[in-house]
Image (cartoon, rainbow, N blue to C red; front, side, top):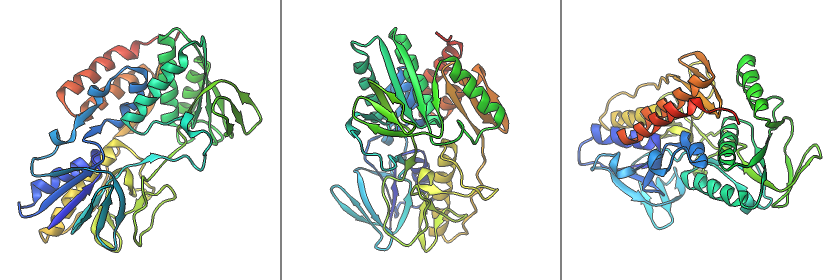
Length: 382
C-alpha cells in the first residue's frame, strides 16, 4: 500500500511522522517536495533585512522525518483525485492514500506588468532574491522609494524589514503601502489597528487605502487615484493562492484552498486528506481558519492520525483546532493576540522571535531566534 504526502512544510512533515509511527512496515510512506529543505516561513522578512540567515530558518527534510519515509525531491505539476495519480516534472505516481499539503504561493490577482521587476515573498529563495535586488537597488541612490502592494501582515513586515535594511546602509527611504481595503488591518480591533497606523506614521510610511497599483513600467508606478511614484523598488504582497488546482469533484475557496470536512477528508474522496495552507478548515465558530504555522502543524498531525485510523480500521476523530494566537513584529513595535490577550509594543517583538524559535527545527536555530528576541526589541527609531 502506497501513501503519499505532498508538501514538505509544517503540515507535511507532521503528517509523515504520524504515518510512520502508526503504520506497519508493509505500508510505503512517500513525502514529495521540490526542495530538500523546509523553511520557517514566518521568518522570511528577517531574511530580507539580514537579521537572520538561511541556516537560522531552514532544515534538511531528511533530518526531520523518520528514516522509513521515502523522500522524493520533485516538483508536483498535477494531482488527479479521480485517477489517484500524482504527476511531477519527471515521474507519475499512483497512490492508495494521499495527504495534500502543498501550501500556498503568491497570488498576483491578474497583475502582469513587468513581473521581472516585481519582488515577491513566498519562499526562502524569494526572500533571498528580494534582499539581493534591494541591495543592488540601493547602489548609487541616496534616497529609496519603496512601494508595497498589500498592507496586510506580510506587506507591513516586509516593508519594515526593508526599511531596517535601508537605515543600516545609511539611506533615506520613503515607504508607500497600497491596499484595497478601507483601513489597514480591518480584522484587528480599532485600538490595535490605530496602534499600527500610529507607529507606521512615526516611521513616516505613507498608507494608501482603497487604492491599487494601476500601472508599473518597471521603474515608475501610477496608483488608481492618479498619483505617480517614481524610481521605485516594488514588492507584491496582495494575497496568496494554492500552487496548483487538483483534478477532481470537490469544493474550494476562491484562493484555491480545498474545503475539507471535520475529519480533514475531502468529501467524495475518503482516501484523500488535506492539511495546512492547502486546506480550508472551519473553526469552532464556523469561519475558515487563517493560514498559520500552528494550524498547519495541528492539521498535518491530525490528518496523519486519521489516515492511520482508517488503514487500521479505527474511527476517525474530529479536528478541534486550538488558536494560540499570532504576533506580527513591525521594527519598533508589534501587534497580535496571544492566548486571547492583545499584545502590542516591544514585548511582542520578543515573543515573536521566541515563539518562532520554539517552532524552529533545532536547538541551534532556537538559539539564533533567542538572540534576536533579546536584541531587536530594543531597536530605536532612526
